[in-house]
Length: 258
Image (tube, rainbow, N blue to C red):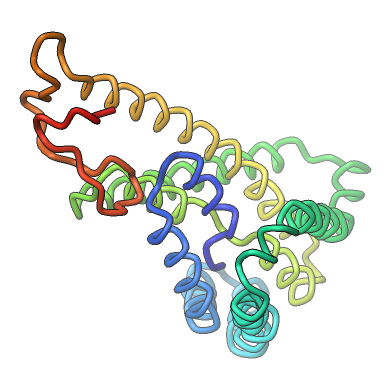
């Protein structure tokens, strides 16, 4: 699935690079009609029997069209509507839009979870549920770690690293729930890992945000000018004030150094 739009909120909260965060969401959304079928084919090669057949059929028959109609076109319409209405009018109704979006996500998760959760509650398989939780947590942590690794390999700054970690770690599970419920109706338990990941990714994101906030605080404290040094920051290279890379830089001898 493409990157979750909620990753931008987490990235903003962690002083991440918002241009990069939004770019990751848009690019992954626009490419999803092609990347998602490719991923399903790849997973289908590791499956067997009816599961492999279902995955390959889903990748070739409906997924690309579904993502174009259900994800790509609404995104383009939203961008066009935002430009037509104007930033001031959008800002005025943004609190109501956020509330409506939360209600939509709640309804989406409830309606799709209703397909599989009654069976789980009526006849719980604790070994199966435990295995799903372990796999989902491991996958989510690995995804966030891959974002950190990419940032390290590219020598990204703190803001870019935050955007990459939240972007690579969080998926648009609402779309995944709808797609799985339609294409794999004969396998209702397939929805359980998606539901679990939707919950787990926000818990992991909260942990990552806490770690990043602590490190950002330590970094800011380390950059405080020493007393009697005339406001100079010694031994610290020039770096962006804002993690989003807006272009404002701290310079040695700057009286306004935070």
